[in-house]
Image 1 (cartoon, rainbow, N blue to C red):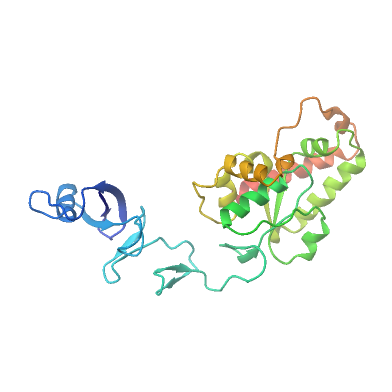
Image 2: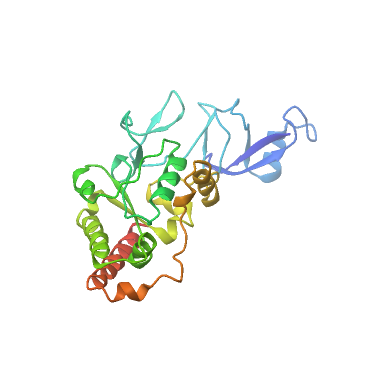
Length: 275
């Protein structure tokens, strides 16, 4: 068995199929010629192991006759072609230290995860690590770090009632004020913040990848992230629904809670504009 890519008039791959071995003939013709004639499209063999034409063809890849290679789509306008590896690379090298990822608007950004407890910090950290294939960072909770850091900060946000009550079922107005402090800093420094909605990122890895300017991976799923956390004995940090037994009316009676809800709505609208 072999694999064959069909190309459009611009040599862009439109489909990849499994076919007969390349050494066999069909009606006296080699498979590429026969499949091409049958389909009315140019057909070029490709290989899973990349031993021919540099890499396995994917839909949207372009076949370069001169290089005899399948070239992946250019991921970002600013990236340049690497003639040695026949692929695309960022215009500047990634820093050697820290967790950095390319963002189309900001270039190389250091991904720091900072949010209030019970807002999905650990899940987001594991997800980013799995997507970037880089070491996990530590969770941060101090709002001052938003001001101090010059790079991008990933901030998970969760409904204040759910976040606060999950951390402290007997919450006081001080707990609400602490929640407000962080999220005011978030809104004041939007140029360095990427916000992640708890209800979305704990259910959709593609949402996380998109917010980071990355392509999602089929290998990274919500379940695989949770399993990784369990394997690391971090199961206590698995995201979950707020128990219905929590007293939301307790927060509603606190003087600062209305402001927290207003901030949450504002951040949620901002997240929708980023997505």
